[in-house]
Image 1 (cartoon, helix red, strand yellow):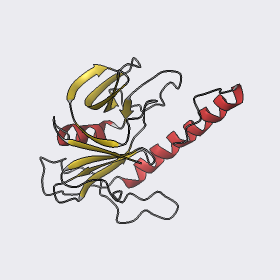
Image 2 (cartoon, one colour):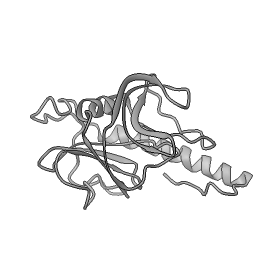
Image 3 (spheres, one colour):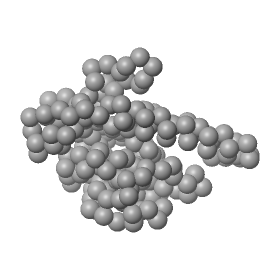
Image 4 (spheres, one colour):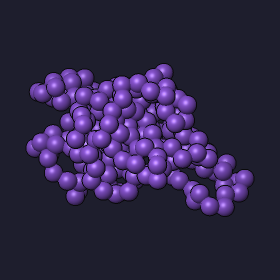
Length: 190
């Protein structure tokens, strides 16, 4: 997702940023629809049998879904800020599931975190009812975590507010909920 500078935006800068964000959202939703395929993971307790397969290589013209180099070891969640993508990784380092996310307006610093709290259903700081909330960081009083809108509609965050909600589809949030229990490692990468 392209982000413009938060300093000194003019009217045309806001329009350009909103247009870029809208195009990114359309691309995000189209790509998510194209990568869904059932797969048996062999460990139902990890993420369930309906998880999307992780392609060996991205189709021509699309981003790679390969696990980022240097993204840690062992069972973990990997979150790439640059690709707006998440991987659920098993103890042997295999990606069980990968999916795109729509980040909030506040990013966590590049670091290794652990899941600190979870909520089944709440109202987010943006007023949206969300479910399967998995929190792992706090930046200047802003909670950072993954969740899904209860109505299933992933929308762009209000760029004028400080929001830490990383939104995804209900299906992907459910997989995250089952995978990322308290204490699970979250590795944030570029």
